Amino acid sequence: MILDEKYDLIVVGGGHAGCEASHSAATLGSKVLLITQNLETIARMSCNPAMGGIAKGQIIREIDALGGMSGVVTDESSIQFRMLNKSKGPAMWSPRSQCDRKVFEQKWREKLESNKNLDFWQDMVYELLIEKNKVVGIITQMGIEIHSKSVILCNGTFMNGLIHLGEKNYEGGRSGEPNSRGITKQLIDLGFTHGRMKTGTPPRLDGRSINYSLTEEQKGDESPLKFSFTETTPAKKQYSCFITYTSDEVHDILKEGFEKSPLFTGRIKGLGPRYCPSIEDKIQRFATKNRHQLFIEPEGANTVEIYLNGFSTSLPEEVQLKALRKIKGLENVKMFRAGYAIEYDYFPPTQLKHTLETKLIENLYFSGQINGTTGYEEAACQGLIAGINSHQKTNSKEEFILDRSDAYIGVLIDDLITKGTDEPYRMFTSRAEYRLLLRQDNADIRLTKKGFELGLASKDRVDKLNNKIKEGKKLLSFLEKQSVSPEEINSLLSEKGSASLKQKVKLKSVLSRPHIWIEDLLVIDSLNNFIKENEISLESMTQTEIQVKYSGYINKEQDTVLKVTKLEKIIIPDKFDYSKLQSISMEGREKLNEIRPKSIGQASRISGVSPSDINVLLIYIGR
Image (cartoon, rainbow, N blue to C red):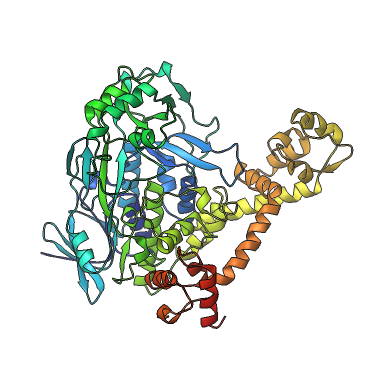
């Protein structure tokens, strides 16, 4: 059967990448079909029920600034909000929300179903339709042929997914759901290289069987913020998480099961995430540590189910339960289901362009864990970019690419396609060389106008942004002009351990001191009255404060960006023959031929390409 309906885009998979891809392309005007094995599991949080965290929170705010939906949905399902790393500099501040898993799914479904350009189909995609190295549609497991101008694969962990639990293993994309088959073999036949990766999840526990009095309570922020720059509201009622620890006794019990662990017996071939290891990995790799921190996280407001963050495992069920009951607070715990590991196919992302379109097959895009990433946030931002670029190409518009100095999203995609990855890629602030410019608080300033120019971010968003910028300029001007006397400020300075004033100085000078924050200065009547009279928002106050305190560092990073941008603007011809450059090392030539960088800047970031190789390349292209 051939479906009569023809689409601009078919999105395969309804996870975080698939949701953002479908939403972005459909909002821009493409006619989109989202096809997934089970419409009831759209936007499912397969692992922990939380969004954001270190660097990941910056990504969610960037998605929101561009007009994506992950930030909005997170706010609408949030049951706890925390700003992480507040004791460090603003480049490290990272928002994180604990979410109600079911509400998160429901809100995403509502957003997608309200888009008139988006259709849905429940089935498994078995084959891609390819004509003259161009994708033209898909064939489902049920034999339905559906035609489109482009396809985005967002398969998550479902491609030949294999679940491991102790000595048992069985096919599945996640617990209780079948894997997908067929596409991997076809892609290999088309010339793609592929590999296997592994991820895992902890056991889910019955919260009624936990003695919380023996654990450490971790509350949300007293004045919770939110992710979206739109008019969403912060969490009205916050639910606490709790902290407990493993012990030597727990480790000894877990070690008893190592001989049955698929990780140590060689049954799992794929590499797991180095920065989010299983509990058995932690015990093996950090043998000198006698305890590891665990987080008891609620799955939602209306369930007793608990996610035990930090206890990812694929050991036999009986070993898991025996070890759990030796953990403080979990002495009588009951499991809803055991933890498990899952192995799945991925395709090294060096086979992609910056738009996430494959180099081998035109109009075919890869997004999410198929590219070797791990995490909802990393997947969602790839879906957003793939969806945008699919629409842009279908409508003969300019491709949309974010630079490393534009966004963490730009860093992530450039890392993937330039350096590749052989282990699950997770974003960290340390991966971004311009992280002081790429803060969570200024994501709207960096990206909202770009989203508006595309047609993804609304006019309301731009108006709100312009008002924020106007407020910030007004406040900065006041701080630069308004003086403060020793009588007004010295008691505060003494309390903060800062040198007293001997004469009047400008407020900006006081704010630039370490440990003095704008909220501290609200004791000064002139500033407090100005903020109230001009209705200066907390966001604008924070933005201005950072600008005053870190202006020297920010200016230095901006100068560095300008220098590096010169290399990004030196374009390498598409069909440049690197094999003729005998002065470049053999490894350098091989890597350059494989990745085909667009610019000298990208070429300089390829592993195996040396600075001397870049100098030779510059000479050959006449620079």
